[in-house]
Length: 382
Image 1 (cartoon, rainbow, N blue to C red):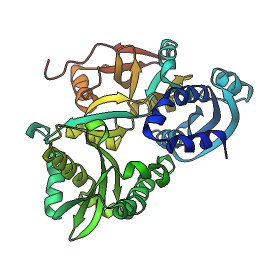
Image 2 (image 1 turned 90 degrees about the vertical axis):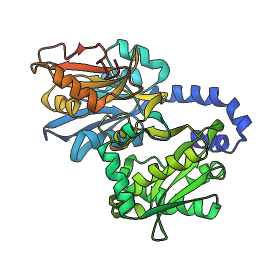
Image 3 (image 1 turned 90 degrees about the horizontal axis):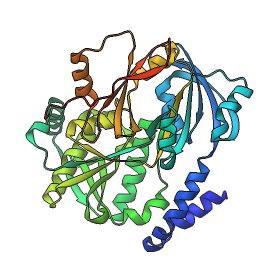
Image 4 (image 1 turned 45 degrees about the vertical axis):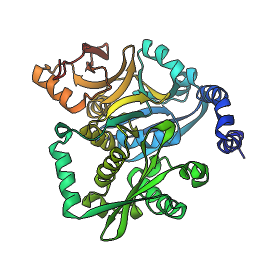
């Protein structure tokens, strides 16, 4: 067994008070490990424009699968360039004769500042958020009202249990199929054996239709708080999604936890892309971003060709900069940005927890990118 997996297996089975003592060791190991990375050349048609796009990617498998899915339409041509030191990525790509317009590499938090100063865009792998309960009436947008109507129309109900057999059944018949069907190779699924001890501390909320359990969520209670943790839909069936199976998880889960006396609920981790479905859904509920993962992706624009411009324009994302977390939005340098455009961007992308929208103007004449409006866009409360 690989040394890392052996040590991780030992770590996961340690009692909590022993595991905490190993956090500094684990963090240092992760930091050193991200300095030497598996490097890939990926080529294909950019998803929106169908123009040829080439990127050099040195990030973990799940993040790579997700990013490649955003960047490319259809099959890609991938070439493994070996395991290389992070500071040699450009040199290795050049020596291998790889023509590329983007470089994406893994970074840990201590590297964020130096990468940002050198012009890289630093994207956290995940962002975390919480919501106040009960939901205020102004938080109930048209989309949320539509979800509630689905729940009523399909007569969805819920029950809560701590039965270990039902929890294991939920994991195997709902969580794993749902994650696999929705996220494919990019799904992050922890083995049941690694989660078993934590699952025993959870409650399971099951959504039912006519007595049949169709979806569910594990409710965790870390450090006196409440969290919607692992979600699932029976067999990953999209028919249940159309009935409002996921919306019911949030509606019933938040209501139940409010009745239990909680005023804030952790909604867990979300991908940092501002058009991501899960992030957008949590945003419409009123989630505030409270944290970002300590590991991220650093993106370097090598050549701002039409395919790269299309990818950036169509995939705004959350970035770390000197003022914290912000929403990076990319626009054509030759296109005027009106106040109405700024208000639309605020409506679509700015959410509590982000310091501001950062507008990047892209020009073929160079420099490739510059900030056009770095000032915060005023919110409706200002």
